[in-house]
Image (cartoon, rainbow, N blue to C red; front, side, top):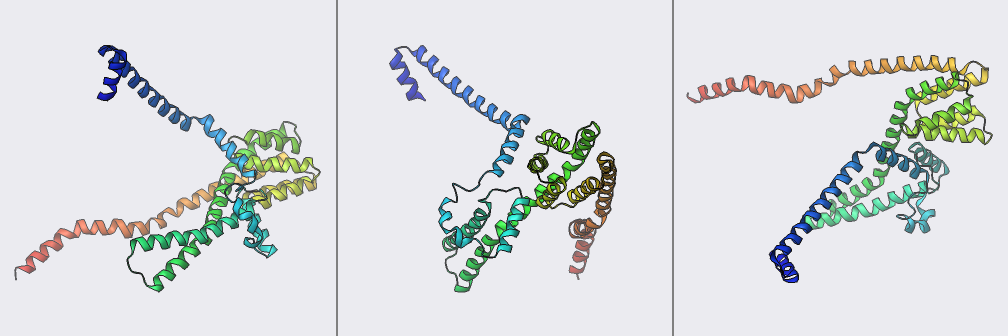
Length: 320
């Protein structure tokens, strides 16, 4: 800092001007840093930015994934994919349930398993070689096989977690969707128009369900029967509440009854089941609290309550 001030004073030929220029530069630097921190903080907390990011994330899931990262695995695609068509169909269905409908999702998933199954043992064995001085062959074999098994199973666990998170978000969106659908149908819209309106209204708050409804509407515009399009949505989601809704709509369409009245009845039953489920979970809290109570609270209580008495007994007996 002193050298910079000296250089500025020599360049400007004035001590006061050099100090003034240095203070100006410091002030500008601090102001730029504060503006950057403020912009980053407001960008992270701005609801509009968060919603736009959610929309971009949902749209990116429908695009081909892994094109850049897993491009090197494309030549060995035929070797990493399972030969059994049933296994391919099962994994593809699970990927669709997680929201990944791209054609490359299947081989990217298996490519990730191959990368983890090969790379994770290398990392684990390298760390063991650096940390542990002497390792037996059995320990090396255990570390290699365990890390390889973990690398193979980790993508399955991540996929299961993504499916459960997506199903939970869709489950939370069903009450709002039922209310909006009933209002749209009672306003005079047809089923296709009501589903399209529902998809547009839910795209910000519940993008997963809105995306599924948009696919249903696209299938209906392409000539697929409405009950078949709804059943396909049920196969993509695999949620009990959605299956009940689709069954109710299919029966109403098949028998020609009022869809709005049927949905209102289903909505009341659905809310009753949610209340019963909440009451059931609340009733289980007492049973679940027994284990932490026994493991953590009771030992501490007995230590405080009985500990001094035990210490006095030990002191008393030690005198004899």
